[in-house]
Image 1 (tube, rainbow, N blue to C red):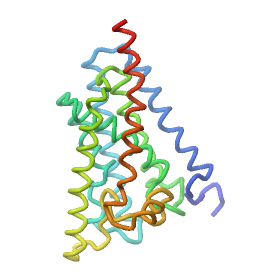
Image 2 (image 1 turned 120 degrees about the vertical axis):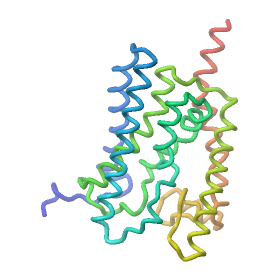
Image 3 (image 1 turned 60 degrees about the horizontal axis):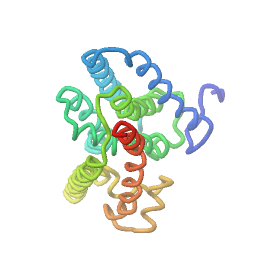
Length: 248
């Protein structure tokens, strides 16, 4: 098989970096198409995009089930952080729930970016041109773009008051998923359960390093909290500056 037909995926290889282009391309297409539309039109189009993203995710899992050597259903439930956002995004759009939107912006944005930059090590060596790999990066790119579209299309306004609430939601969900992992592991239903990666991921460049620093499942996440808080404050600063100018 020629190199043009098969290129193994590796962390930070040229093909991996090229995958990052999907997000800005998708953002530009939808932002410039919707910026002058009514709020109703924006919501309908974004809801259709969310449904499309959920459908390609389902197709991606089905293909994985038939093409991967090992596919354990209880290990592949939509309970990872980004997978849950596939459900939360349409809910946020339909209900106009600002707490959900804040969670998507303050947690989902960075989570989707991390999903692209530090993808699951199960994809190492997989063909970058395969359906599974391409869809993995496409649906994560759409997840990354959604919070940015919510803000840029003025469907959600960032505020520091939402930051701690979003982090509380994240910690609560992570704890629930850790308990699910422990249940699956100790009952023998799925000894490889690792939703939210609370059990660690040695081959991942970031999670593997954190697990070495704090070799305790779930608790090894602790250094992420202040980093995430700082990131959330940083992405709220533009809105704070806008409000100060308005007040003047």
